[in-house]
Length: 138
Image (tube, rainbow, N blue to C red; front, side):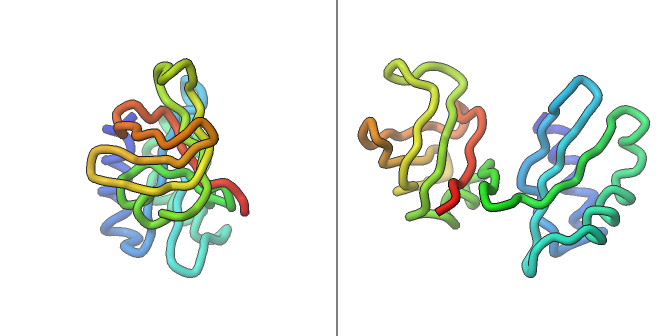
């Protein structure tokens, strides 16, 4: 999936330079969901433009372009750093101390790992172990 996300980011960098690709997830064998954001927010016109920029992907995938909403996905170190102090849910690929989901305040974010003050205590999770993460509504 990282290769598809990188390709989408590169295409949009030239066509829509103020758009940030937050996450590309494959939700079915032939379906991609692309979460985008930009200063000032996302509207239907932007979603349509992004879809048009990615039109050739429609030969292989159905494409859903969406705004992040209040439970914004976090997928890159800069996303975690931008929201330090906010509550988030981080789900891991494998068990960590018998759990795969950690909910709490984001208290640290380096280039390689995120630290969450969760209900089970402070936990540091390498990004490679993060399956999915998102902000929680306050």
